Image (cartoon, rainbow, N blue to C red; front, side, top):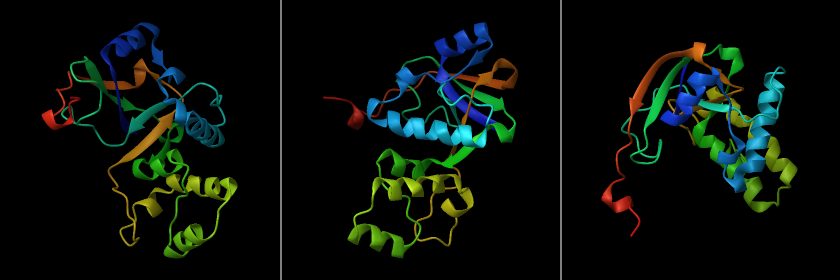
Length: 184
């Protein structure tokens, strides 16, 4: 399956030397570590050969545009890798729905669930029990749902990437943020 990954050129250069790349826990925002560990457990459940310890690599189903904001810091040499990875080695999830677990919120599917959640105090276990719903892409992107997420924003995690998976490299240097977004 064709997927895409964005990385700095210096990281790509290291990958070319070593032949492979895995995730790096030092890049995980501290308040999200527990959520990333949860995602790693889910990947391990779906891919028993994954060790569950090494942070995974995040990929996109769609090709990111080099002009998108926030792919990498402005001015930093970067690459978008077009990768071919067996689909069974990727755990896909809805990017927008992933923000519910990141916020320690439940992934609610119906108005009834919402009303129950807002009127009753849900336990952490009840909330976390809804998180695997982010992997049900049909349900998350179903146009008949009240809260439908965009079907083109599908992300995935995979244990690692190797140079033989790289089919094309798009080099780019991210542009400066628009003036209204710059720090004053």
